Length: 222
Image (cartoon, rainbow, N blue to C red):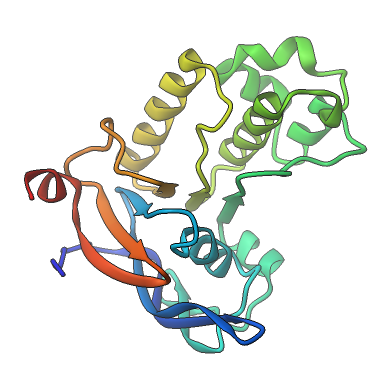
């Protein structure tokens, strides 16, 4: 495993083990989310990527190890308390409210018009209920709402799924800009995306274990 200097951390997992029933999903995993950089959790389905995000967000509680946000131990802190500290998760599916319109959903995080500045595709949808829309449109709404909240740590589970190529390109620029502004972003992917910056911090997971840690440029060279 290759070590990587990370600087100030927005959040990290230390020796985290997570169980579901008798099955252990994470086996003593360490994950770092440095401020000012994009991070990736890379691995196949079942590698533990989504479980890492859920653990950071407080949706899953480890039976061993610690979760820290800005150096504070939040292992026992509920998800809504972590959200108040600036930790926002966009899961891969079902990240919208069934009874709310698009404008109402976006309004939970800020003025809907600000989201439309980034994603003008949303404007014609403001009056429609989120569940009336396609999966890709629902994903875009969830992403726009998360960005509108301006979180310190943005956790994204395969965020590009179902999005149009033009929207994907804009999203990548927005995430890069967030990192440049000093925020932390952590995404899951099955393989390292070509657009990942060379200094992106990459965690490679296999069957709930961290098997490699280093920078994207280093992984590409190897």
